[in-house]
Image 1 (cartoon, rainbow, N blue to C red):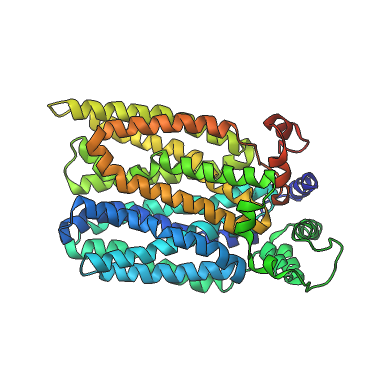
Image 2 (cartoon, helix red, strand yellow; image 1 turned 120 degrees about the horizontal axis):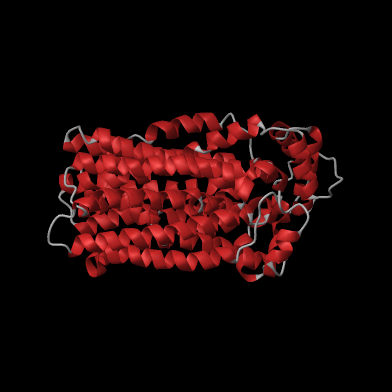
Length: 496
């Protein structure tokens, strides 16, 4: 069935502009999240100096953003099932605005921490809802491309955060970092207005029994009426509505409408394919975070400082290169996603990270053991750091979000992704709150050699995952029900 859809979409040409514009608008929330992560790398340097806080307090402030994302992740899944994907994005934008304003005002550490916690909750919402909305709006043949846009937006936001660090650093100490953390309030407020004019996810509408509204949305986000009707027929079949039913409003069970009981069923009563889906989704998120990229993004200035760069302006400028590298390779990745497939990108990315992280670890070890300044190490460390970021961004970074979003069955999608991202945040908190302490214990070079070993293990894990390129969302249980990768790869239409 899904093969017919793929042929239909390809035969009728280009990417649907309405679907693309809807995903791009929703991705603004991802850009705001990226900005917050990027800007904090520099803001922490100035907050420490202004408020005279310790390294431990810096670690707690950095980690709290991700720790508070945990309840946000879990609440986002249930909220989006109950109130809809669109209104959940509006709620996340509102929370972002409140957190940013409170942090910008923060006269002392406690207020700053409270504002950071509020931002963390909104981060949890953003990480869930943008990928889910994007996947459910997108047609199968362009789902990799469109579902990658939130990740691309995160990277653009990250770059803007680094650029803000560089320019706002030139202001007075008290004003500079407050401008850095206050900026996200502006795009968040704009997104609230924009989302009021966009459509709801057609899959969520069918879950509510609002089939007539879902049909109207699918006609907007599909290239032909036939394609829209075929997509609607598949969605109705998954929800449990008669595929030939022509009613505009259909009565569906309450637990289907609200998502009630989905988590219990996912963990306690799921079928073997769904259990494999859950394990796969959690696994890719764990390896994304313990692979070390979170430490590089947040502690980039500290890493470059270790090589001998002491000027804060130069540190901020070197960190901008991390953002540039992420944007360039994220942009390349979105065009590769539906061409070479998810699994190949996972493998290339992990292999590249093993080599570059090992090189970075060896270089930093030489610097730390040398009694004199190692001039070549500055350029080498900066270049290799950019390469680490490039390899992560062309594969593991965006593919993790696309893969974990698309593989869950409709009933479990929002809350299943919520569980995966909660694990993502837990591992991220562990990495960012322990990085400075582990650095002091085994040296920074030792930390990156450890990250290289972890990515070598990840390489094996990614090899065991099935390919999902070109398959419909409704077909994922079948893919994960297969006994081998070979069966999946040889299935007609799976090479699209």
